[in-house]
Amino acid sequence: MKRIHATDAVDLEDGASCRLAGWLQEVKDLGGIAFLKVRDRSGVFQVVVDKDNMEKEYDDIVEIPRESVIVVEGEKKETDQTELGYEIVPSAIKVENEAEKPLPLGVVDKVNAEMGTRLDNRFLDLRKEEKRYIFEIRDLLLQGLRDFFSKEGFIEVNTPKIVATGAEGGATLFDVQYYDNNAHLAQSPQLYKQMLMASGFEKVYEIAPAYRAEDFDTIRHTSEFISVDFEMSFIDSSDDIMDMTSYMVQHALRYVKEKGSDILDEFNVELEIPDHPVKKIPHEKCIRILEDMGKEWEDEREVDTEGEKMLGDYVKEEYGTDFFYITEFPTRLKKSTFYAKRKDYDPSLTTYFDLEYKGQELVSGGQREHRYDVLISQMEENDLDLENFESYLKTFKYGMPTHGGIGLGLDRFVQQLLDLSNIREAILFPRDTSRLEP
RNA sequence: GCCCUGGUAGUGUAGUGGCCCAUCAUGUGGCCCUGUCGAGGCUGCGACCCGGGUUCAAAUCCCGGCCGGGGCGCCA
Image 1: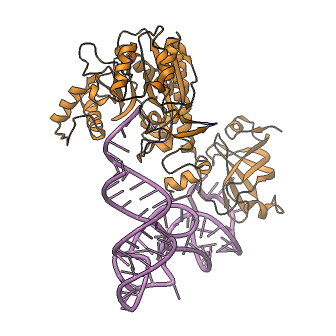
Image 2: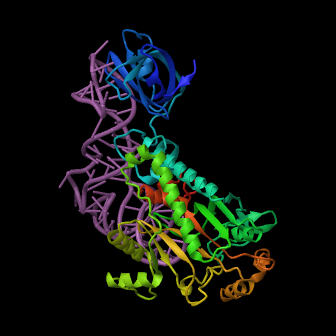
């Protein structure tokens, strides 16, 4: 007999034979009758074991440790006493894999566990329905993004994650021993995306891990994260990039809302689909708004973490949205982003922007500098060793179109979308400054 | 890198100098119970991160170490 899921058995006729399997969530032994709650991916079904009918097996069955994997064959019996409207009267129960006791982390315990304990035992943690839902939403978000890129004529690419040089500076790179050479894990696909613009791909996107060896310890950073990047050519200004970004976010969220509304209900999240165009506030104006709100700076006036949250609240109140762009980042704040194009009419400003979502940076992007000579001088300002960038720079000498793009933190997107308290909740096996396992 | 905070049974906690051979819940073992679903009743088990110091007395105070959590910087 073929195994079916808990929710599939709902459609069977009363009295039909069936075979189900899953994890034994709990046993309720009342003495002469016992109820087993068995969980599979679709839900939880109940098996009722009557001592009169299963005299020999009864004691063994009620002693199966919870979270063991069992296979149940039996007869479907309709009842109004279970959530799914039926229970299984077993003819045979087979233990496929008995769980050890005690569990290092209870799946249906009535006490909470700390995140460290949960992450140490992540496979058990993920048996919880509400944890799996996060990754179902994440899956939908990825589908929505790919659907958008495909419709817009972007092609998906994969660029190397083992690289010789980083995009900005060297301090945040992980070292990798690469045969006889020193290499690094890519902190961004930035330089490769640009090189593909020189190849004439015109529109590319990549969804891939990025690595940052930063010493951060926050609820919104991990050392390994999934970066959603796109790059496009023949743009007139960074407004083209912002438009594309807005449509991308809009499309992806709409996709999630359509396909995942029942899961979103579980999270109690009212999903906002941003209107086009998304509000744009130049960095300088952000500073003025923050000043009006009473913010003070010790030294450089910029939108810091506190400022981001304040602006998020401000925009929410003034315009009723969780989305806005901070545009025209001053060149002084983007110095290390050597490939950022500066405004033609005012080189103290860049074309760079951030998309803020619920008071947190979600996307960063802008128009790139496509002119070889200007790029070189901006790199020299950063004291970069041009020799290390030879293969990158070469692509600017033989026909490079105007171009620009963005990077979006997928994990952070999921976090903000579902109001998760920590980005680690949105990652199956997160990597941070102290966690390398599991 | 800087700042704050914490480490007590498998899990989550109470306890901030003697009331503690450590509280409660959950878990787990035994017994009772034929409709449970946070089942119930009786009963047992199980812990003070490591090292040094102060003190008549340390889970508690001090120093060092190790390991978490959070904030900032930075960023996605």
